[in-house]
Image 1 (cartoon, rainbow, N blue to C red):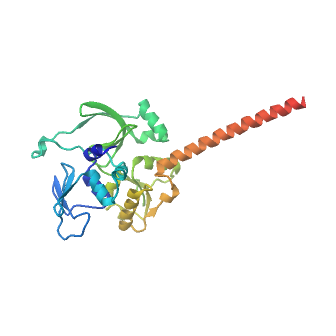
Image 2: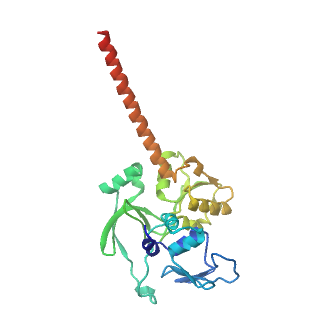
Length: 307
């Protein structure tokens, strides 16, 4: 990902939410935030959701997605791009018809939703060690900007789809959290659906919990009202800065929330941990086979010497 791709495809609003920054005054296309680098009584940072930029009236400085991350993290461009790798490429700048939202049209169209069967998607699930969970997903064929694509789809609570494949990581439709309810008093929280599916493989539950898949750390504010409904909250979030900030946000709402990230540290997330466990199992089997072959060869040599 380069700067142009990040600035054009990642929502500046979601980026600011990932730093727990929310608007003081909000309108459909713009919002005022408090300055990100100083204390002030009157919000002076104007964020334009349509153009995906922010303008600080106090300093006269304009920010795009990459530069606002640089300002917030005090980091280099490469570090900012690394931080932005977690975000979905679901934002599209709205060019034209800005004064008449009714005339705006979707930049995509869902063509078909079916069971996962495409060989490329099966291979992707095998790579992520999630093939056994394919029934939890759907195969989505869609058209975007005049071209046809397909990917694995995971539905959110607003009817949108998180789309994943070897080549894409986007959201079709409205961005939202996904809640899976089983009338449980326990809630398990994940950043993405691959982590949710990974835990189902690593720790099969006889009595399922309720599950919250954020689909982006920036969506944690949308789930703030859920936590009070549970006696126990377990967090399976990423071992990085964004995951840490998300854990802090949840802990402020539900102080007793249990951080389970140490169980798969130093891996980035649960899916990385699952892949590593599968690889260790394969290495063990190969080593065991090599040992058996070696012992068999030694036994044959002993037999020959005795003869």
